[in-house]
Image 1: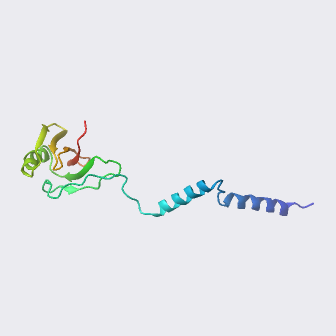
Image 2: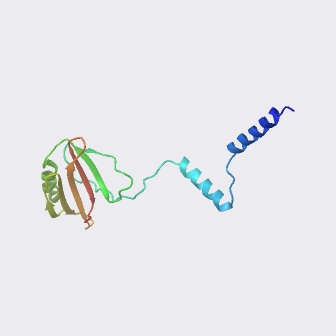
Image 3: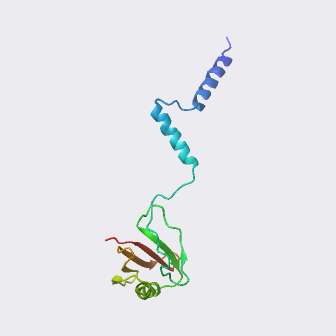
Length: 146
């Protein structure tokens, strides 16, 4: 008795069952799957809402804006500069008060320098200058944090 056609049918049925769509066990699970499918087809949006950088905020000459990560709500502005050493710190220690941002604290340092200043809304912000991976300087403006 030749059984090859039976095994072929069983194998084909198994393959078809493995390739079929997932069965949904409840209406809420179906809605969840539909929502996740719709979300994956929409363009990505920022994961955080940021405090906007005020118009006219001083920026070190030659500094280039860098894309900010979506998971850091405290970050307000981010730049890279090819100037090294204390150039960014010195610039902002002078430029912030001149632009109407009173200095709350100056914290010069070797690898990292920090300036705490008062924003126009009265909140305290920080300017952090530190060495970047490419040998330049990274400049961050962010909400105050310990």
